[in-house]
Image (tube, rainbow, N blue to C red):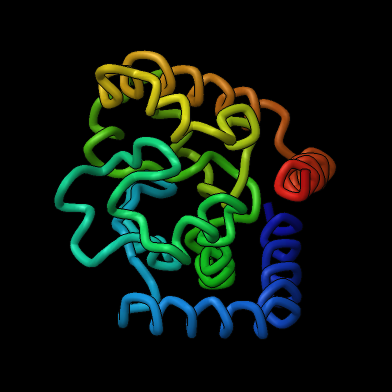
Amino acid sequence: MIAKRIFDIIFSLIGLLILSPFLLLFSLFIIIGSGFPVFFIQKRVGKDNKDFGLFKFRTMKKDSDKAGLLTVGGRDSRITGIGYFLRKYKLDELPQLLNVLFGNMSLVGPRPEVRKYVDMYNQEQKKVLLVKPGITDLASLEYFSENDLLAKSSEPEQTYINEIMPAKLELNKKYISQMGLRTDLKIILRTLKRIVS
């Protein structure tokens, strides 16, 4: 685990340094398009079932989270113009490199969930809380277009709770059973390839 933490620190720092011009540019576009704040900080559940603030570029109109936690479809009316672009290429997730640097996330690990849904986990599913959450994981790759899947459902939240969430948790448990630097590198490369393609 020490090697994984060192890996996270080095690559999150490198990522932040290399991407800093783009991060500043995206921030500027957000401010011009819909004002401050630039970041949306959402409470998520991390390792050992502890809450933390997850950083994302704000891609929705202010206070949009009060209308629901799930985003349904790429053209959700709450999403801003720049927000659509950032979401399409997963660029809204880049500020989570700060979470990795601060130590409440890893580059690779089960995606952190909001408390509402974590409270629905059974004891077996809660095993995913034994490790740090990550920016990407096997479930992120499998459900890369999750919003579009939900848009096809007449009851998006029930589809998420009864179908998508359990399937993602099974993939998370699979990752935990084989986690290591080699596995992490493979997932990172697959994620980058998926974004580019």
